[in-house]
Image (tube, rainbow, N blue to C red):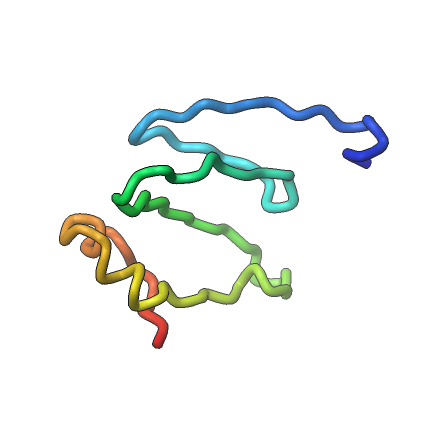
Length: 83
């Protein structure tokens, strides 16, 4: 539908500490991180118990990414470390 011009795109600029609540099926994307500092982002999904799909799966953070996080960022991260 996006290719057909039936949907419009809107930029939602966020600052550090801002919260964005959106439907999981919404088209979304971020800007590239052009720095050498990892940009942490926390996601808190809510899925009803009866709803079953891949959105319930929690993927681990790659160990190489984990090692580049600051101690403060590591403390905020509740995801398992992969590998």
